[in-house]
Image 1 (cartoon, one colour):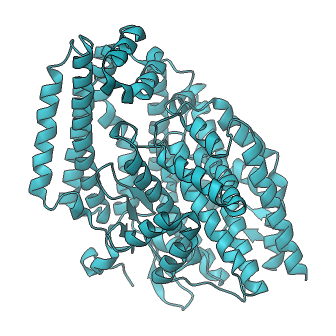
Image 2 (cartoon, helix red, strand yellow; image 1 turned 90 degrees about the vertical axis):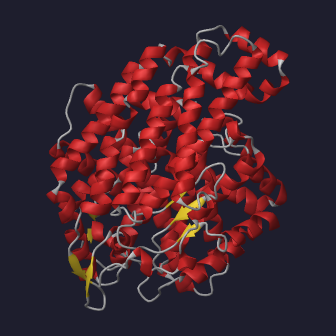
Image 3 (cartoon, helix red, strand yellow; image 1 turned 45 degrees about the horizontal axis):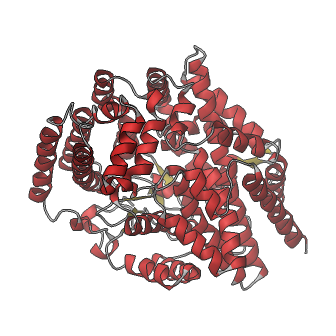
Length: 598
């Protein structure tokens, strides 16, 4: 049975992006407005710091252009992701990307012109003109970057190159969403079904081991077929990251990537070290999985199937919706009502359709709804995906509601905290309301898999990302064989001697989109660890913790991420949150083992 066409999906299960633009004529009008603003902004060159008034005018005009541009880009990319095989949508997305590149090029003199002057001049303007007080944190952050900002001409060249820089990710996205043709496999009912990104994990969750093994081998056969092309894309992405880091004279690609959010390198290294020091609970969990499943050998295709064979949780989207609303009531009536309204107001695109982008995300901008893309299947895991993305969307909603445009975003470092706090609250809600030993075991299994997937797995990804950049920075090259070797060795380390590392998993790196996001993945693990601390405070402390958490969600980028998170109750410059989370993981493994022995 093939996937449905987009037009076959009911409207109530689609997002309503017409709230951004009602038609393409309106989109085209804003496209032209951005071009006009760019022309106007270019006339300010050389005069930005002539006076406090000229400085304020430049900032406001830049904001205006950027704000309209984000609407243009957001709409076209959401439209593209509905159906990546629609050539018209691909054309509009490409045009908006070109416009964004041109905007970066035209405005590239803005920051260099500010920082070529002494900061005392800007501070003087702030004291002269009260409207500039709002931008103090923004300006401080600009001057923090001063030693990495290049000349006006060099910045213009880098801005012009940004289109080229997205090629590895763009090509991977097209291959992954549109061009790869996955074979058919056999489902639990003995029917032939076509593999897809959306159906792969549900098939891996099958209780029938033959179903899992067949789907696993057939799915990865596609990536094995294209492994050399995909290796070249990863290699190109790494070289691009290193190039931009060198040009701006950062120590290395990782330092360049985490500098933007003012994250110390020690946070990254502490994460990997803390996980390395706590691998034994992970290895024990693998031994427990092997024992409960009564397997002579534990394979990689056995990782997702529920360990509790006589219990299953199928969760329809309507059931998931009600559970999510009930769970998030702990965060207050206003938060709960906003979540409830999101299901009626076109925030969410629910089901998979032919050509739709795989996976899930939350995306919008300051003037739009915080949209959620899902590819929902009726599983417990998909309910967790829903509440995860709702965490992102509510973070955006509260930030936009409480911050001016200049601070109306938040760092990726903070983003995963909001989403994972929601997941932790959901798991607590489900465990608290479990009605049998089997249900509790099933949920513990799911919780432990969340830990495995978010802390251990994402840290392994972070280590892999660090290692592949180090190879190239030391003069080496990345081939498919090199990538497979590095990836295999990490799997051996993280999963332990009780896991058979199947050869297919050596090429898993080829399907991970986050390896094109430039040192992004570590933030899942740090975010999860922080979320455990914050959710425990919400559950145990009540209203004071809820107020701190709401303040965290509303802070945007008005302060640096480490500071915002520390104020909320998690100090990520120490190993404590990660070690505390992994200590909980160990306790949960022991609890599950005890229950199975009863």
